[in-house]
Length: 398
Image 1: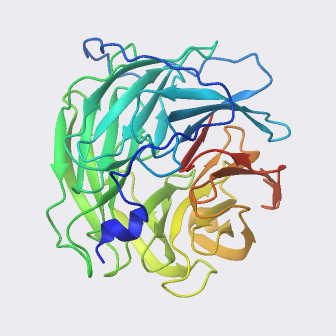
Image 2: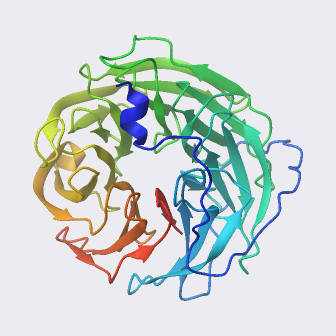
């Protein structure tokens, strides 16, 4: 089978289901986006303080999947206990399977993962009266990931099905302008069993100097330089993984000198050296996920603690989290053990901003599990019962 089927494990185009979060819906209607005039290339404003004891949690889903949601799930969590409470659903977005927030905390962005892919901007309000600002085309099919450049002026997205990456300008209001670039991964050729390139992720390096795109179909990570005036990408290098690795998600160590790559198809992780000056990524040798052979794990994503001491990997096959100790300033990962995730098919992981909680979105069990993180010893302790959320594929705690 091709890479599309192995990644998704669900079909697109099924009828939308009626299941929603167990809370009253709070609909918001789309309004036309404002003109994307751009702003000066300066760091984004700091996040706005929040006085409430609970914090916002946004949940991604597939609206076209059987039993899926009807939009972006809205919830809150208690930073001390990890308890999650549903507050409604923001409708008007199709298949919001991945979410990201602007550096100033004022705008939420979501992919619209469908054949005619799009990205949507949502203005966040303190009172929960969030407003959809509009949707822009990504120029490709099946966008599966997006991120905001650290300076806040550009939104980056990855079209999985068509193997391309796109750039959109961000208006001062948070709304998106028309796409400024679209790059299709045409070389090197697809890996074994793949039908073409499949861009799975696009992120900026910690210093914002380069943009890296992870392509599962080509077994390649591409490094681009982003023109922060024009919003265009220029490729500067690429790193090849071994054939059939299926790289899915890259996560940087806080030092910025190393990154960790989860390989979906051969069930490995790779420590990569990274040169901030040139943008060159140099993969090391594949390492075990602690879940068996190539068909045993389907690793999804790694997250690293803020102090750079521990990393956690979601394994969708055995439904576990692998714990790694980080050594040598980020240059090594030492496998500690695996622990049950408490759900089925953990698609995505996220740490709370303070690093004390770990959230796992479990696609097949329609749930989000939360863990207390021991940042000194790396231990994980379940924070109560799983929170029910239809076809949970992304959890974004703010």
